[in-house]
Length: 63
Image (cartoon, rainbow, N blue to C red; front, side, top):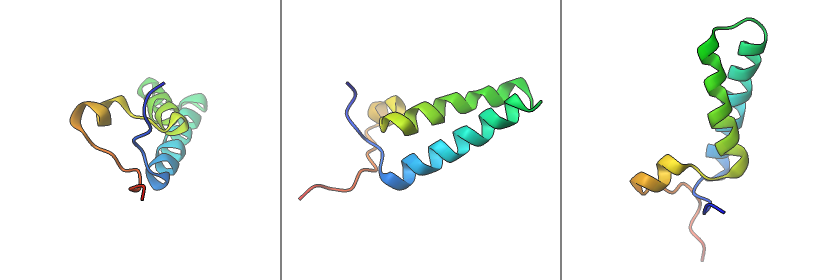
């Protein structure tokens, strides 16, 4: 399992943008709108492989 590296706001924004793009594709939008599956999946999982590669972590720090 991938380590979580997305904070709550980051995850919410990804899911909202992903859903909007997929809905747009479903209702006659351009084919490239299916790219919304990627932010939707990473937001749902809470882990972004690109963030892992570049060392970004938006999760709040644990005490």
